Length: 445
Image (cartoon, rainbow, N blue to C red):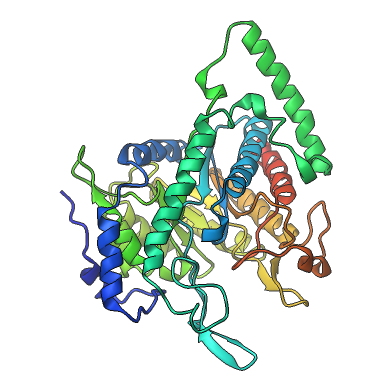
């Protein structure tokens, strides 16, 4: 049986991006509560996802991973969860139908409540306070009281994630994800957009195909439900370690906070606590690779995180930036491929393309997002390898956080409805546009 590292062992490795709690007793109480909480996901579900990502690794499927940059407790409502699920279902249908490839659906939700920050502090008008690190750590309001790290929030993360997963499971098994609902997913402001109209035309074709299949007696279960999995960055060690459990079937450790967890760009130190913890669990896992990653780094990560070279176990999520992807990615893919390593390659076109608009809002250009995905596909096509998926920050709402796209949001328009507490997200129309463009890339791949 593989031993789970203790919190003391993990903290001895000097982990980065961890909050400094003022009350160690309160931390112990929160961790003790989490240790007795029921699993949010089950080991068998994690194994099923590993098998699905193994198909991505072999070039037989495509991974769509998306959701909020940082979830909020206030955002745990039926409408909000449904809206995020709806846009992911629409995107998956576009990719599946237009590119004729199975799509593995992975939500960036039910646990994405913590964010790494470039600075421990934030200054406004001469006042300096601890940085907001997500609802899992402290409050967004710029007050001394709100910005104090509170370990009780870890328990709130668990409860909010449980509520979110309950809603998602109800939607995907209760009829909302039925393929016969393809028209009802295309509602409100999306319908009048050019890509909403393009989706409607595709939905008509799907509806005709479903009617024909029903007429000849074919009505498989896959038409009426979808497999949907949860994921988040495994950042806060107290939370992730407390929710790592030994599976009674296999006597092996699983992180039961999500089906899939990943290590971020800022916490991927080879001798660090995050790699140590995730190297011990049996979930499918990912690691973000930015432009400073060397080919030897990639091999070392694979050796630590997937020593048995199990297909579906390890996903490399690249985040280079539109201007660096074509230069930086080939060497990594070439060396990993030459070594015969089983990894799924996924493109995060968001995090390398952030800038501050003239109005002061943090934003991203839709064209840069598309350019990075295109570069990702071009590199893999040139090397004869499989561009396995995309990882995007998005919302199901009509926000104005990223500039460009078919709606032609400009920097002045960002103020209309900028709602993100951390990073800018694609809105639902931009997400649908992205899915059509990626589907075209997939057809060529």
